[in-house]
Length: 124
Image (cartoon, rainbow, N blue to C red; front, side, top):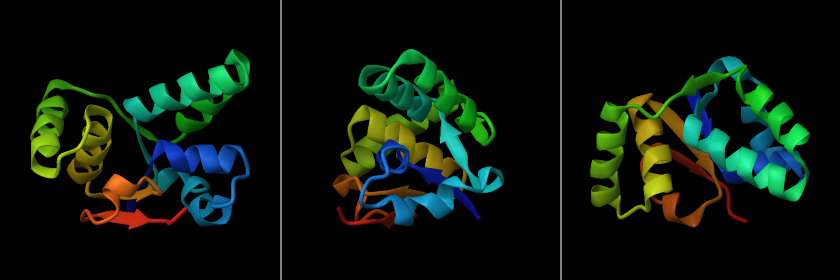
């Protein structure tokens, strides 16, 4: 089984948030983890703002041990269709489309994914 941990899960893990124990099992096995380049973008932006650039680069290095999925034309078009189908904003549509294309389970606590197929949702 493959898993895609949404940015909120990474942040919980990195900050020892209250949901860390729920997200941690999915983040400790890189062979089962897929990382959209969009999640790398969001992580780098958040960490460099909240901490510093060096820490952000270290975390991106951690993500590189998993399977990184770039946003290419086919995936971008699929994300646009996914956005229309599920009423998702652009970034969420890219993440969810990546999950579906890779036949992975999306691990998240982001409420607008809560009732979608292929999602394991953790309530905040």
